[in-house]
Length: 380
Image (cartoon, rainbow, N blue to C red):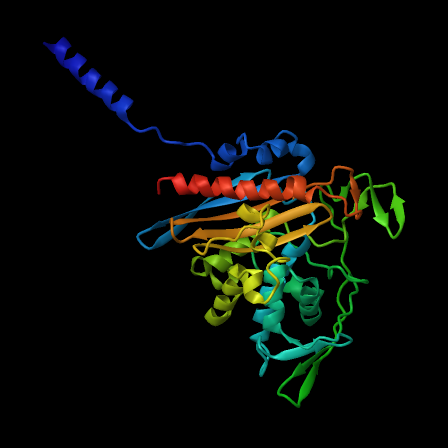
């Protein structure tokens, strides 16, 4: 009888174990990067040459609480990549924060930079930064802030390492003296924000700070590695953390984020997700995926209304980067994703000969799609 009882319980246990649903315990990044989709496989088969770094965050909501589960692929803040226009994100936030300390001036105040022909507002320049990644908009805000203010403010917040040292796509981009701003207090009265003299950038000492086999200088090919040591530095970990504090400000203390008013934060979030066509740009040139590399960077199709992408991209010197919070309100999907890839087959920098369309955009778009599908099918 005892033997029959033991056999009965053993059969129950074995049946229960066999009938339990299998739980997928794999790292989602490992799962997605093992995809046989050619857009991902062609990069992963030679991943070393593409300098890929990825950070992915799953978001859990339960009983009104939010928690994060982070996953990394080759994330290494000591390994340099050129951040390009992604640095415009913290500069836009710092602009709004600094305006809070100036009486009689807000984001809708009109101004122009001395020597510039454009009269504009801080709000408009921030909108252009997110809609089409406008370089001159960033440069105007850079003149307003200056290198020392930017780096002093960012160094006090535990986002991770960061150094912003120069303007973009302009002669003398690393000039340490900013240009004055002429600000309209009303239609007829102006005041001048004087220029500032800032500290010269010191060379960065990081892995891969010198890249490639050569670079173009003017009309000449210099047959030596391109030195990025005086360039901007904004690694994946820092980008991802800053985005977290903007998308989920209630999760962070005041000394862990750039502090904005709720009204300013609402403005930023709207600017981050708004598509170029909704900001006055020609949709044939500035299609929906123009500054939305994840999921839509390789297509000119319209992004569905229920999918919102809050992000900032960068592309220069063969490096593509996107830092995004992606939300599908229809299907209850949301996640954070930051990734960078270098596509420069010939190893020559500044020659405008990069494999953006062939490799870079397809990889980032497919990465976004596969992680979206992973989250769509994941039990929460």
